[in-house]
Amino acid sequence: MKSILLTGTAGFIGSNFVPYFLETHPEYTLINLDLLTYAGDLENLKECEDNAHYKFIKGDICNRELVEFIFTEYDIQGVIHFAAESHVDNSIKNPGIFIQTNVNGTFTLVDVAQKYWMDSPFTYKEKYKDCRFHHISTDEVYGTLNETDLFTEETPYAPNSPYSASKASSDMIVRSYQETFGLNTVITNCSNNYGPKQHAEKLIPTIIRKALAGENIPIYGDGKNIRDWLYVLDHCKGIDIVYHTGKEGNVYNIGGRNERTNLQIVDSICTILDKKVPKNTSYKELITFVRDRAGHDRRYAIDATKLENELFWKADENFDSGIIKTVEWYLDQK
Image (cartoon, rainbow, N blue to C red; front, side):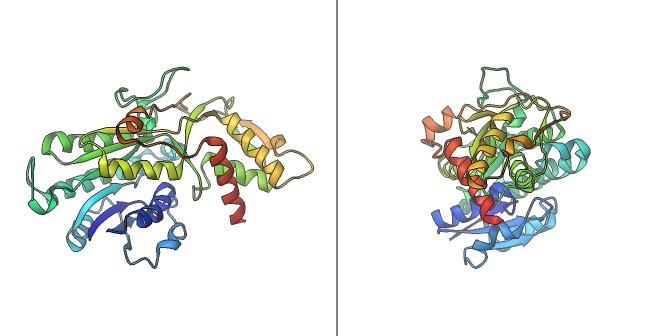
C-alpha cells in the first residue's frame, strides 16, 4: 500500500477531497500535513478520523525537517499539494505570509520530494519511478480577461494580487523541478470553487450567513465581476483524474463552464433562501454595494477543453444544481 502526502486538506477543497479519495482509492494511505491556520478545521475531516488509511499530522510545510521526517517515516510515494494562503483580501493586508507559505512552502515540498525519490537529475530510484508531485493552483495566475476570451493552459501568467503572484511563483518552482531535475509533476489550475465546508469569509458562505442573520449582504463595486464557478466535488474528481492519468509535465485547467456575475450569485442564493427559509421580505433587499477592493480582476473564465478531451473529465454539476446543494448544506449546519 502506497502512502501519499496531502497538504492543507483541513481546508475547503482538501476536506472534500480526502473522503472522496479514501472511498475511491482504498489502495492508498493518506498522510495529511496541515498547520490548521484559520482556514483549516479538523471538524471538516471528522468523517475520516477513524479510517485506518488516513493520518493527520499538524505541522508547517515550510518546516523542512518535519517534511523530510514524514517522507522517511511513511515512505511517501506521491504528493498532492493543496496547502496555500488563498484569500485575496488577506494578501493585500499581509502579503508576507502568502510568500512564505505559497512560495517557500512549495519549494520545501518539491525539493524534499526530488531528493527522496531521485538519485540524480532525470534518474529516479527504482522504487520511486512512478512517484508524482501534483500541485494545485488557481486561474488567478492568469490575471484578468476581456468579455469573450477564456483562460487556456497557454495563457501567459499575469497575476494582479499578492495572492495570485505567490501562486504563480509556486507554479514556476514546480515547473522548474520538472525541467531541471526531471521530477514527475502535474499542475492543475482551477476556477472558483463552491460547495460544502467552504470558509465563512468567502463570497458564497458570506452571502448565506449574512442573509440568514438579516444583515446587509456586501457586494464589491458594481457586482458585475465575473467568475467561472466549479462545484468542489467536480474539482476533486478532476484532481483524481489528473494525478493518475495526466501527462507528466503538463498543466490542466479545471473549470465549471458556469460564468456568473457576483450579482447573479447573490440573486440565485437569495431566491433559494426565499423559498426554503421565507421571511416577510425578500433576502434580496439586504444586498448592499461596498467599495471595490484593490486589484479586483474583472473576469475569470477557464477553458477546460484539454482536460475534457484528453482525460475525459466532465463536471457533473451545473451552477443551478450545485448552488442548491451548497445552500442546503449550510442550512443543515444551523
